[in-house]
Image 1: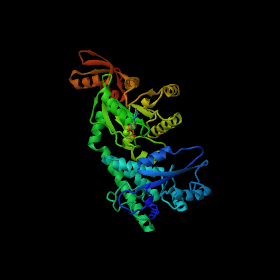
Image 2: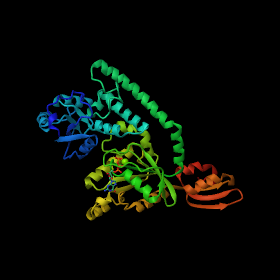
Image 3: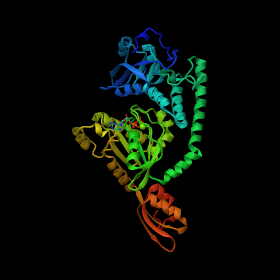
Image 4: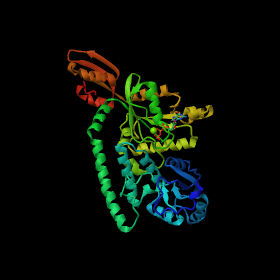
Amino acid sequence: MNRSRNGRRRQSRHGADERPGRAKQRAFCIAVAPEHEDLAELRELLRTAGVAVVGQEVQHREAPHPNTYLGRGKLEELRQRLVEADANLIACDDELTPRQERNLEEALGLPVIDRTAVILDIFAGHAHTADGKLQVELAQLEYNLARMRGLWTHLERLGAGRIDGGIGTRGPGETQIETDRRLARDRISALRRKLAGVRSSRGVMRAERERAALPRVALAGYTNAGKSTLLNALTAELGGAGGSRVGVRDRLFHTLDPTTRTVRIGGRAFLVTDTVGFIRKLPHQLVDAFGATLEETRLADLVVHVADASVPEEELVEMVRAVEDVLEEIGAGGAPRLLVLNKADLIDADRRRELGFRHPDGLLLSAETGEGLEALAQGIEREFRRALTPVELLVPYEEGGRLAELHDLAADLERDDTAEGVHVTARLPTTAAARFERFAVNGRA
Ligand SMILES: Nc1nc2c(ncn2[C@@H]2O[C@H](COP(=O)(O)OP(=O)(O)OP(=O)(O)O)[C@@H](O)[C@H]2O)c(=O)[nH]1
Ligand SMILES: [Mg+2]
């Protein structure tokens, strides 16, 4: 911590800070919880956002105070501790109502950011593709519209350039706020239109057509569980194609944009997609804005749920549940699921046994060392077969291309050349079965 900063002028209520570059921010974390809560995740989020943590306070109460989040007495007590800790920012582990946020800022005399703002800020920093950037901007605008002030200026992630004169860069003042609101709403509609355009663009449609032909596996899971590492391992070990390695880093929400690779398992090609990680209390603005990205998971034939099993059991259970909740929320709750307990290389023999009986369906694996990869491949193959639809087709000889496609897609394919064409019995993924319907014999397709 840089002591020489102690005497510097306070940030304005809206976080404006005229120092050039990104200021070193020193956050004091607060939370309300009925029982013990260690705030490790909020600290990790802040670390990823480039903010230092200088202290924390968890108030034990059933529910947050509706007006001030923390109770009166606690607020009094905190003021002194904030000075001692040399904090210049408060970070709250829950999403605050605009009123709670305002009241907290007034009572504590420091800018307040909530969990949602931190997550949105991280997303803003990690979005690389045009699509990703649009999605994050949309989520931020929606969050800010309710608050009408500068989320970005708090964490100073975005240089003035990008949102020059835009929402969140100005001070308050009633007229300004009205103008900002209107601008924000205009921008939100424009972004929605743009995103809709991106989605319906030719490229996306073509990719989707191609995708429909091969069985799709989505890697889903808590952020930092090792999804990208696993995709790399699957591509490297099992053979596959589709470009360079996916970025891996020990930070939250490293991956935002979905990456799809072809992986060959049991002689058949699968499309495996790595996508954005989930988190407890995932801001609903993000779930909305990332609809197209999350679609990859919703449309998958199989969801491989990757969990970091190197954490204590309680945390593991909580993270697994958080992911299940989000899957449910995005409409992927019904898809066949395979649980992968990753980071096996960090787990000792005792804990391995414990995992074995606590999560009997879980597949212990290490994306780093390759342990368990083969078992995962078999698991994918097995789940895939379970979801196959039996078909009986008569494919005319002139449709040779379709036959080749069938060979790629089908399991247990048997063919018999007859006078009318090739008679085929096989088992196909449901989506593919629908596409071959017109060749169906006896209504079986
Ligand atoms: N020891 C060990 N570390 C792992 C393993 N798999 C992943 N990691 C590490 O865990 C961290 C996160 O890995 P990623 O693959 O980026 O995780 P992710 O799930 O894609 O994370 P986000 O994209 O942020 O949601 C990195 O530091 C990896 O090196 C593993 O099997 N063993
Ligand atoms: Mg990743």
